Image 1: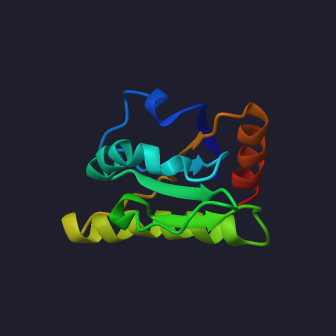
Image 2: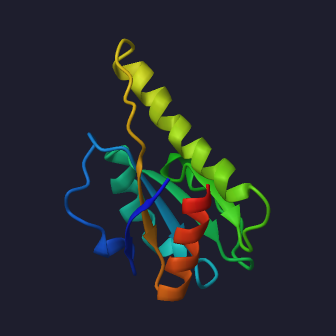
Image 3: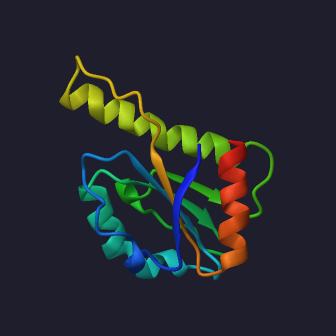
Length: 132
């Protein structure tokens, strides 16, 4: 899996995102509970069938994001947790495809977009995704 693009904020996501693309967004919290401020944007992404993988800050509170977030893992990224979270997100595409179009399967890999306000963290997340 390769990172398609990195941005500093969810509001900076590209405009080409639509429900025909297989997109996974890695949203990295650099401060505790930062994701709570973006629940409306996450709701819009959910309606576009974009899968959000939230990488929570260690000190973030437990919150129920419902279907807006496909996978949640807590920093630091140890072991194979990122890989399992990405597989979980990719599995949701398979489920939605089989519900909508049971005879058709997409063989392309999903596009991964990294959202983090720290450029160094973006590069580190990109390395983790590439290894996955």
